[in-house]
Image (cartoon, rainbow, N blue to C red):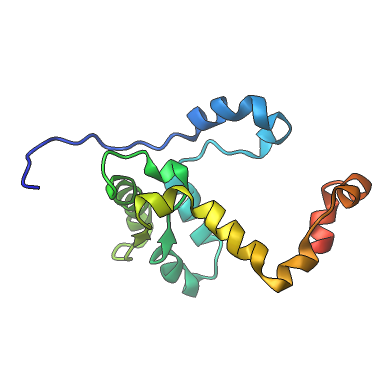
Length: 147
């Protein structure tokens, strides 16, 4: 606290992630995007009804292991907020952008926590896909069981 230490800015570049994941995601590579995270957030907000866009941008939630790469707990959320605001304020000055993010430990395992909660819901049992169903229907089974 009180330190005048200079901290580096965090840059988001999905191309690095894509290169690292190619061996594991070869069949899905064309579905990945090289767009920066801030652009994806803005694109998602702009696809909503106009009256919902400000609410979406005021409730951006950042979680997952990639959100833990900054030098401080807030460096990634703060940088993302600044990048989103730079895009949004060019079109709609004054809109408030808020990026929420849990603490580092929860952030790193957020997808596992969410999956655990979802998997424990009684209503989720109807959406389970067995190996036999997947082998019979392929990826189309997801749309049949999870409309």
